[in-house]
Image 1: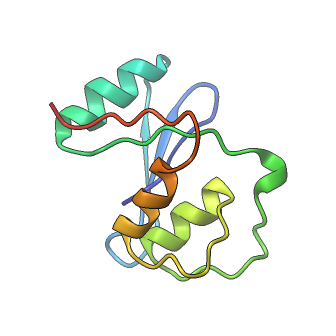
Image 2: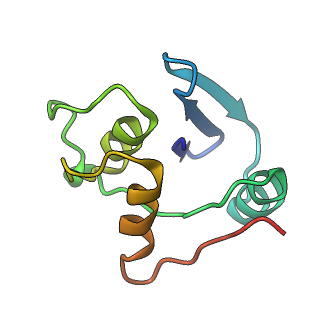
Length: 103
């Protein structure tokens, strides 16, 4: 699992699967193009969400894993979510969430 953040110009994927955070920058301006064409066709299930700045608490403790990193970026603070599947179940249970699955 990894979060992908749009900074207004670029999509930045924060991959922590190697034990450290490795950013990847992609120049896709269109959200649909990035979400469906790039990640879903690569075999990734995409759960697009918008993190509210007020919800982000960088001082909160997060485990140095993809789940902890994703929770920190999204502002999700559920200390009993440890696995990518648990995080996926939590995020897809939120209202108005559309999931893009690999085609």
